[in-house]
Structure formats: structure tokens, C-alpha cells
Length: 200
Image (cartoon, rainbow, N blue to C red; front, side, top):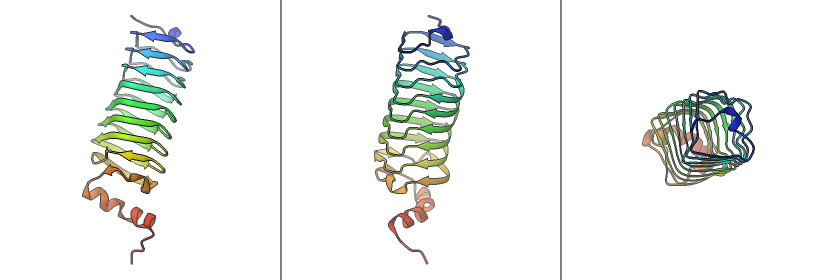
């Protein structure tokens, strides 16, 4: 069924709806449940999804300067060719999520539970996993300008497909990650500083 922007309400139950070509900017759908919904070619600047649950939902070509989704749950959801300034999803849950193509300037997953997530051919300005529990995250052919893994707990995280452009914060949190030999050489000064090793 085709939906309208007016369907986005606090604690709404949204089943099998298609949001196509809509301006969803400034809407507050905090606590809403999205089941098998599709959002395509929508503008969503300032959309609030705090505490929302997104299940079997697909986003395509969604654009937003800022999207608030703190403590939200994303399961079996795909984001394709989205262009987001900031996606604030701290303290939430990402389970079996795929992000394919597009650009996210700041992906905030601080303190989140992240499991079976795949980032593919996406440009990420800041990937913030500080304090997150991350299991089976795979990064494929992605530009990542800055990565923060301070106090994160990583298990089976594959970063070999990440082009780490500038900095890695909280390098001690990389335990449990797989990197390439070239990435390890780039990280060597940070690891040495973390371990208190002097190079001279």
C-alpha cells in the first residue's frame, strides 16, 4: 500500500507500506514499528525514529542531513544508495543489516549491539563503534575516514575491505578484528603508542 507522510506518527504500527518520493522531514515516528516497509527516493531531514523498530524494511535513495534513531532496532533491513549527513543510532540494535552504496558522513553506533552487518561500497566519514558489541561485521570496498572502537568488544569483525583514510581511535578495541598486512603497517604507530612501545 502507498503511504503518506502523515502515516509517520509516534508509536505507529506500519505494515507493508511504501513511502515513495515523499518529504518526511521533521516527522516524529519515535517508537513506531515498521514491518516489511519500503522507503524510496524520500527526503528525511530531521526524521526522528528514536526507539523505533524496523523489521524486513528496505531504504533506497533516502536523503537526510540528520536522522535520529537512538535506541532503535534494525533487523533484516537494507539501506541502498542512501545519502545521510548523520545517522544517530547509538544504544540500539543492528541485526542482519546491509548498507550498500551511498554515503553516510557520521554513522553513530556508540554502545549499540551490532551483529551480522555488512557495509559494502559505501563511503563513511566517521564510523563510531565506541562501546559497542560488534559480532560478524564485514566491511567490503568501503572508504572510512575515521574509525572509533574505544571500549568496543569485537568478535569476527572483518575490516580488510575498509580503506582507513585518517585515524583509528581507541586502537586497543580492535581486538577481535581481521585486517590486512598493509593496514597493520599503517596501524603500527598507534598500536605502539597504545602499548607504550617507543620507536627510535
